[in-house]
Image 1 (tube, rainbow, N blue to C red):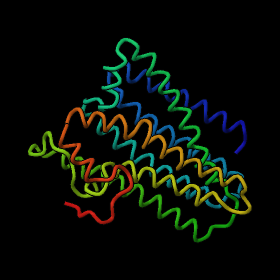
Image 2: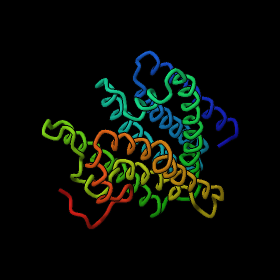
Image 3: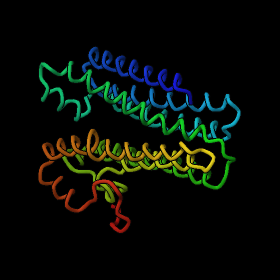
Image 4: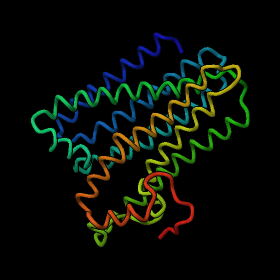
Length: 263
């Protein structure tokens, strides 16, 4: 990865989130920004992989690019389908209420922070793709980790979708399947996928590969402490009250319990 490529990708991500800002202004549904962020980050990762493959000394670049594209398409299309239903994501709806007349100004800044986070995360993808070491068993493990991440997140989303589609579950808390083992299994599997990039990147001949560890560290921080669990759980407590408090007491927030039985 050259400095010019990093700057170009970073500027692209900033522009993508400016576009996302305009889309949410026109639609009055900020859920679209998550779809734009996901597709833009996926394109950034694929761009790094293509750049690495052109140099001819990065044998895992095509694999990394393919897996990044699979992750981005799966998650992005899921978010598009959810957002097209017309109901704004509860986190953004709460921002709209809390920020009032300052919503547009604060939302623009928030999305640029998301663009910066995406640029930082994309570097992990680029470092994974540019590792010049020969392919080996660790690459197979990394591919399985990322594949399990995509499948697990898709399963968690499907289970939640079926639960919400049943009128008998209106106002109830989903505590079935993977949701009986973690309050946020979709977030856990999303984070798990980022653990694959250090496995791809770290090698004695690739000293910068260790920097790919920043990917899972950053994603864990975002999901568990910033824009994932905290605002979502605050909304669930407002809407589900004691039922969600009981769920919190019985179910781990992030890392799944291996011993609690699924319902």
